[in-house]
Image (tube, rainbow, N blue to C red; front, top):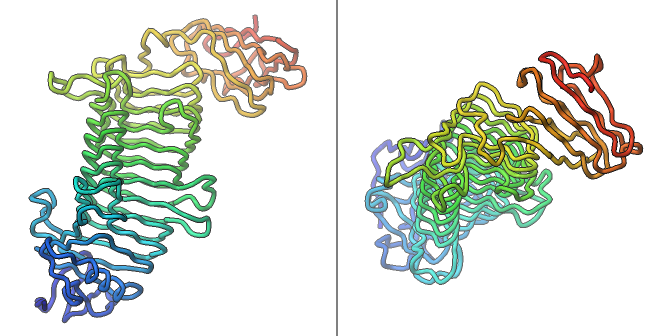
Length: 491
């Protein structure tokens, strides 16, 4: 079946002139289509062999164009080299891209719909993928990338997969799926997560890094909208993450994650969660800024919050987010426990310029559990503690021989801090600007080993009886302090 093109036809980000596809000023090989290899494209005839032959003939240097108005019924497709697949785009939300190019998985398939292995520098643009999940006997993924680098998806639509919509993973420590960009893509109505990073630990230099998810929709998936398991310096920017069966955006074992300017709404668990609540997950140096995060925790009212930061997270920045249940109604009642919830063990969290109205969250605007350390400023609705955390008496902080974080006093005027574990370390007093005159505090060596492993108490910008640091150096010793509005004094 032949195709006729105008002298110049725009495809994706390139230009087709005289049968040659130009990417910028560089012409690629003559463009091929599945029809050149015998595909029918009616959604009824099995086109697996034809489409696979087209992929084999065009990978590592060529481009493959999927004409609009066709549905390619296949069992599974594989590429083991660089591919460039182009489609016309389509009205994705109208009759499953009737005017676009759709690759549909046949009934009772045995493998994922598309698998790219070691396919660095690939691009897929303007094509839809339908996993036909109601007719699959086991969970299958839509697009699976294994050990790929510098790959980009533009304006693709992945739907109805029984597994994840888009899965990135590595199966060795020689190469990883690094520099993966998803731009204005849809991954919706899938049986697990919309996008899932599944990388083994230890990640090290082989954790996927410098990936970007820009714009697009990750909605109505049975799992999370976007789930990252091991990632370094990934950015999620301007996406809609709506009405998923788990969290909207979930991250564990990530560093340098940047979540900015997203709409995260109406998910059954958390809106955005680092560390999956109390699980030990070691997310570090992550930023959550400028997001609209509301009407989450649909699984159970008050069970989750709009933004949850779990045990093991350090140096998290939560800046300028809206964390409330906007316009609650009988149909969509207030559901999230708190606007922001810092769980025990969340360390050195910076909370700045957020809006977390108490009236728009089930239990209040903000909660920090006793073993969380943070600094907050210029927020609306913070601090706003429920009765369980109204006072921070009897805090327990486990010593580690190094930085124990910053003590936060909340709304309590009298605070007891027990340092357990017996390993010593440095603990920081609350910043002076966060306090008013009259706070008193007792810090005690409950590990009973301060003689061998002293506990240093840092004034954190102010003095303790004229010194920047004071020490507890006797077993079961304590330091009793009172703040006069400018400095700390022993008593």
